[in-house]
Image (cartoon, rainbow, N blue to C red; front, top):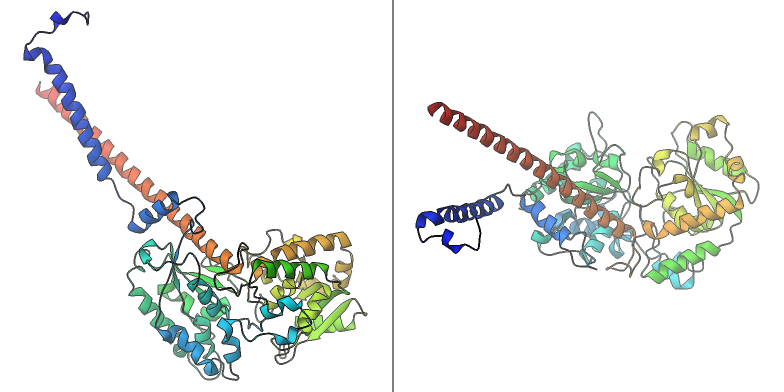
Length: 494
């Protein structure tokens, strides 16, 4: 047909019928598309909201990875524990330890040991005080939100370690150790935002070792808090993790250095880098009476017997190494290497005290450091530490001094530089809002929580879309089968 021949189109309505059919098909197709788009299988509210937050963040937003909502718990779970500091330990007052937001009392004894301008940044921080330290920082963090609907993560500021510490010794029962934990779980499960993921977007800080919260079987030690059903999805920032537990996230023990600014960190790094070290290695620690073949006693004896200038020993008795004595810090500052056996368990606060002083840790059990603090320590263990198997030391097949003397001075320099480079990741700043540009241990931990939850949400979203896709395919397959059956029936009737 010649499209220029207008006579081919008469005024008869029957001539235009195919055009109306085409228009009708287009309209019906648009209606179908609108219907299927609005009625598709939705994401869960939390995933949909967070997915939108992740994909539409403004450039330069410091909270682009997420925001945290902090529960305002009844005072029995945190504030009252601090107020009743006299009863946190059956033998001594812990009031000095909980002072200054959990940093402890100021370390005035270190004046003259540390640079004058940095003396105010030093405290006698107790190893199990991480719960109030993290709580205070998170309350002032720039990514804290007061609107739970916008939160990526929910923080539970329960001081579980301080709570159970009151009942670990003497004649207390398992019920005593679990009482506060059970009350906490009941309280948090009554909160509306718990149920959107059954606690999967919640996290908590546990200021003691992982085994203090995992009582099981006939073992009477500790609380069963981490094993309670209500805690099965809650992530835990903890000073020593169980490697096989994915909910345990190892974070550094608090050291005594709590910088106020970037400048404090940089000045301290320069100080330890330029320090003249007169000892090859050192050991600071106490022995364990009643423990057969105590390895710490072996190291202490070995260090004392070494010739002058090779090993320096500090024997920790009573609370000498915990507070009020500068000997440990001075020893680490003066030594290239520091011996780090197990502590009360595999991990040890002294590892971080040692690295803070620019000394290179010598590890005897892999679980003391390796696989414990993956977000904070360098990935390559040999770049910042030396490993000597404790069994080889015991049987005499390895000499600590011999191993360390074989390491070249250039290699020592590079290892020390890696240790010094790691220092910011091992400290908790005293500035309520954190440091200006440097990320400290708290910043790294919170970012890690956000990243972990975002990855989990993305995985769940992909699984939901995959499931929805399988449903759509099944529906299309059913529609095809129905159409084929209808066509077969029409042919048979014809």
